[in-house]
Length: 273
Image 1: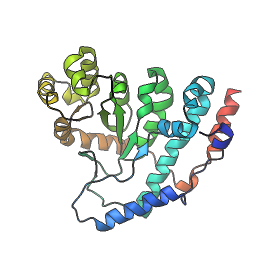
Image 2 (image 1 turned 60 degrees about the horizontal axis):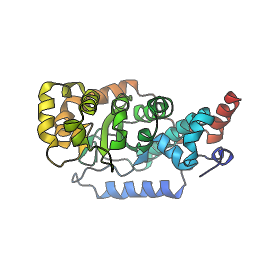
Image 3 (image 1 turned 120 degrees about the vertical axis):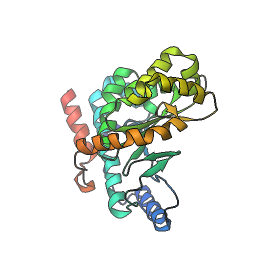
């Protein structure tokens, strides 16, 4: 866990051993590729989750005591992830036009996976302030986002589904929380929230009926729907989402253009004085 002065010294380092490992792994995979597998070999933490990893649990009290610093750090973490994606695209490009795969789900080229755990640990207001902006920045500057969530975060499902650039919201069951299947079958309020959070063509009564049938089997679910429904949705929603992302996506930030974390943190500290 780093102090704010230590965080201010952080920079994006293309020579970092873990970035080098990711680059080498990607190169090896694509050198062996013969149109025989779908994979997304680099998985990101969401910017807020990365900020939590850097700052530690104090980040959650910082949301009240130093909110501008938290926002600046999450924004810098989004820039860091964008820089990694740009570096991999340049130095270890994957085959174009095939898309990528995560946990049985097809995604467009240049899509990213993020581990979004913190959204289930904070209020909706905090998610709007600290989670949405940096995720949207990452998703709209890449090919869109696969958002890994937990059932402890079901209360945020509709909020996360409204993030610009999100493609998939995937839930993992947590202890002492309703499973996604149980939420759909046994919790009317959660069911309404989940169906409302799903793509428009999944809000019909027909889908509600098929969801009832699908969730009775022990399957994991994606985009607040079952894996089978996710496959059905791909042809009708992915092309639309991809086109919207392409239209709204600003140019990617070159790795060399990313300022050190101190720039963002110093500006936020000055503004809060």
